[in-house]
Length: 430
Ligand code: HGY
Ligand code: MN
Ligand code: MN
View 1 (tube, protein in one colour):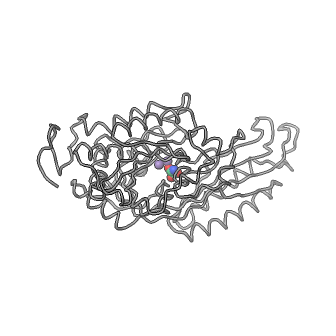
View 2 (cartoon, protein in one colour; view 1 turned 90 degrees about the vertical axis):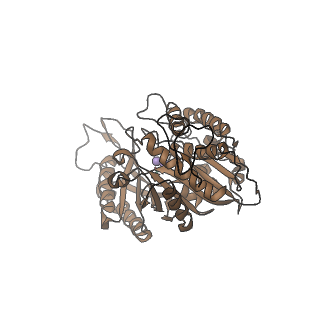
View 3 (cartoon, rainbow, N blue to C red; view 1 turned 45 degrees about the vertical axis):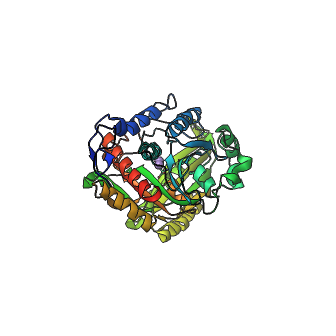
């Protein structure tokens, strides 16, 4: 890469990419975009909540559309509600390079999980265009719809559709209010009747790169600014329905109750034990719904979602069986009937070595020595891996915190990730 001062930037250049002077045009842009997006959140919700299918999420995509357009991308919304910005290359016969992530959040989430990758991808394109170049390969920047699990019990809605994995059964899933996923997609500007057209044509994508916040402490503990992801943990998610009997909290004797909440409590503690098995995985019950959920009524019904993750496929399948045993045995001790239905079962995903080595070289090109580590968080890259080779870059998360308002990554750290991504895009597409 040429040293020297690109025309008109006025900033010190190290390895060709503008070294961000705090608040400088290039270095501050991504962070400024992130903070603009962070303003678009659901009122009355904790943290920086912008859940998929919320009005705020729909409104926020106008900003994404505007930012993609301002970077010179031709923007479209596909039938799955994904926003796809395209920068045509000079060699249109070559498969496109895909960059992306998501901009929806969990309830009570932060400002960086997802948006960091989308804004950095937009910025990488801006920098290529500002250099006056047109890429050889066409570049897509994708804001995938609904990466986070939603009220329909499914995550990665948009990237599943891109991979051709969003089935008619998925579209018929209903939320608590009886709305189908198909209806929800239509409300987000998607077109469920044409969902098959959201599937990326075979050979259209050459590779996929995703920048993401680590959502863990390893980078911070190692004092590094970047990580190249080697693999992404498999995630299995199950809905467990527990049918007890509603009774008067005062007149029903303690003996003989069929209390669905207590059965849910025991099942949840068993799920925790499964997560502790062999130190190879993690397990969580993060969602519990009660009916009638009244202080003076013994719970009739409890519905919980259990999920567990591991890099080891056999640990995951063994846990499937153990969980089924728990659900068939534990509730019945309380006269409660348990029923398990799988929501999703993703196996561990390996990142493509040849693509990861490009990320490694790009990081070193800008003076960073990245860690190499596995991701315990799930990502759209898992779905895209069914289409083309994928690789991911992580930037640090302060205190490892994520999926909470405290989620934070410094502007300089975002800039280092953006520069590494831009360097990789230059290697792969320019
Ligand atoms: O749950 C996850 O790992 C991701 O943040 N959706
Ligand atoms: Mn997340
Ligand atoms: Mn994410």
